[in-house]
Image (tube, rainbow, N blue to C red; front, side, top):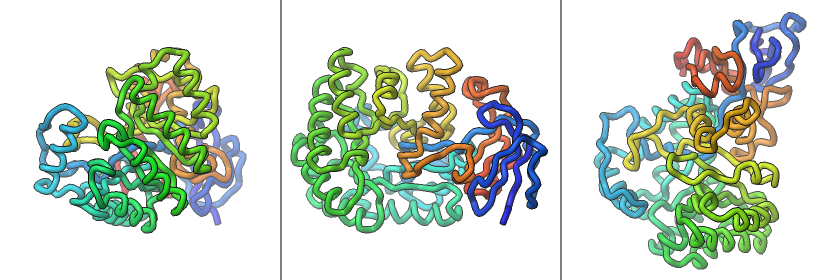
Amino acid sequence: MTSLILTNVRPWGAGPVDVTIADGLIADVAPTGTGDGAGERVDGCGLLALPGFVNAHAHVDKSWWGQPRVSYGGEATTQGRIAHERAERDKHGIPSVASTIAVLREFLRHGTTATRTHVDVDLGVGLRGIESVREAVAALDGAVEVEIVAFPQDGVMRRPGVLELLDQAAVAGATSIGGIDPASIDRDPVAQLDGLFEIAERRGVGIDIHLHDGGELGAFQYELIVDRTLRAGLQGKVTISHGFALGELPPQRQAELLAQFAEAGISWATVAPVRSAPLPWRAMRDGGIPIGLGTDGIRDLWSPYGDGDMLRIALGFARLHGLRTDDDLADAVKLATTDGARFVHRTGHDLVPGARADIVLLDAENVPDALMRAPRRQAVIAGGRLVVRDGELLV
């Protein structure tokens, strides 16, 4: 049964079409005025239409969004921020259902309809963060599809008992388990990877490892991850997040590693932070190495920055990599939309029949124009439901 007809929209800036939506899926895309379906009609007013944004790397459990502002503090290193967060989070009620709902609503406001979120699992919080995220998702009736990575922010081997918590999280439905800097945080990369891959093999989940270490120390850990991935038969199920070292290495070393990543089916998630080294993204794309974009944490104890807008992240990626041509700018937007599908276990994500009806409407001439200006989202449809109208949330 048809539930909604979105009329007169321009997918990716092409000619105007009507999009027929039924049972949460796109049922038909036809030139405007040629369809004959029945159902509620929403006038798209000739606006640019994009697929819903996919946030491939978020931390929706960490934010103080919706609470009074929290000033940034702590030592400005990975270890320092971990320690500061551990010391301060309880007084700010982190994690909480209310703040997680506030973050997810901002995602929706900006057109993000699916996300992979890392959720802290440690000796202090246990699995409580995962429970909070699930309650928040349920409160929004699934308007944002959320996949959970059980994330050991405070380390794995240096915190006895964390491996057991990661195993429990996998049993409880986390689709991936995380790791963090096996060398510099745990100072035992082989042991950390042994533990993570043993759980992943036994529980049938993926692995997503935060890797901040630079230069050859980072490259050394890449090679360990590739080796373990191939030996475990987990091709296509392992992601490296951040991976700053890759952009710092000489071109020949990059090429060697990219060949290994392609063989192991390893994907990459980046938030394209300022001052980081640009990735060899064209070579990654040409080699079939998936790249996803994400917001990381927003307005949390790590950083005061961020508003949940994936178009701004895509713009940051474009600026970091010096993109200027229309094709390259459109590719940056695709990284934040269609290319993010695999990070949330979708076989496809686009404005085509059969896809989940996740659609964002913007007042923009074309895709590069939308990227440059990041105009407000005039309407957002998530799973066939209108959740934003005239820039205002309906959920």
